[in-house]
Image (cartoon, rainbow, N blue to C red; front, side):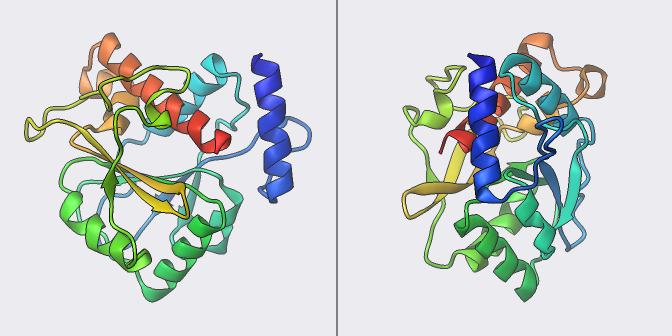
Length: 221
């Protein structure tokens, strides 16, 4: 089953023009480098750990090397899944806005993970990317919570922050989720090495499983 899933994903990626290593069948995901002074580079061990988990548990063939791509860089089209995180300010240039919008409506996917303090900055910037759309909270029966791993109560709570319930918001373009925004959750912290945040193995496993659901959902759309 895992081999069949990996082969299907590879065929879809080749058909979409996304860069795939023909020898290994590996493809890359990327971390977004943005302007404004926010720490886009936060959680350096999170994506490598998520990739390792997905390759082991889902049978995916994601490259262990995580790319870094700037918002305005045309190279963003090489990556089917782009992750964005941080605690602080985010500023998109007009070129960033145009490039990111084109990427997303052309089949790309952006996961934004608020690492605490990002919310008031990222919302107005994404509104510039999609002025006609608003973030909508996804219901708990949405497929993103029901891939290999089931989350009937929505996102897991990884870090307390303001002690509010975690929320998963989406931008939906022509029926497709193009951006998933995790707020009051901090999935990326849960993906990091255990010694970084001292999270329990149970908490880390919840975060990694939810991250694996994201990966599986993106390539199943």
